[in-house]
Length: 255
Image 1: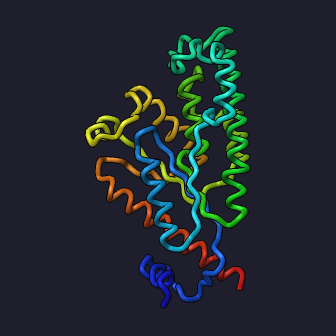
Image 2: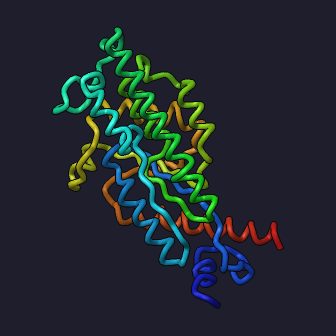
Image 3: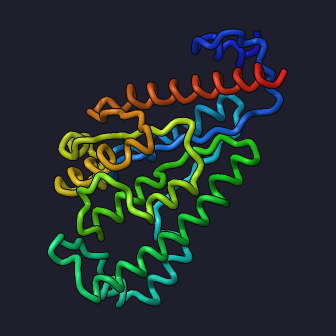
């Protein structure tokens, strides 16, 4: 039995020898969650695991409004978007989310994010999938949606996606696996992970993921509680097992 067939058998997939391996199938695996929850670490572990199996995998990172194009435009309109080129974008309280200045900033930011999301969708997700690669996304649409909603929406607690979110959700391909990493900021900081959101952001974004986006995303929710090695292995195992099962289904459907 080949090494790949042996791995499939170990993962519990029947008829491993019947799967032809010369041509791999495309697959999309996405990781969502607040900053500091471990998405990047897990994504790179997944990329390594797939490549170790001889499967061509491609890592992608998405944060709307962070592309080179957006950075150039943001510098040009820095005083409109932020107000001071030396300061990061402010956090707006709910009461401050009104008025002409805020509306202009919100419009420019939505425009930049829309450009980034469109480029990412066609060139970094759909094109690699079309070429038969496994695409591993560190952050996906819902992460960008939660960033915008927590920053600019007057009612981030709404359980319904807005028109902007629905359009890009329709535009993007549905992941074969979409993991949501939920991390308690305090427990993550104890093990030295930086970049964790404030308690307020953690609560707001967690509610967005679970109440607003879960009905559309069908996340596989994973609680991050400090045992990162166990969590990484669990996610890698689930993803590799799903890949071989999909490959087996393709083989049965195309004799």
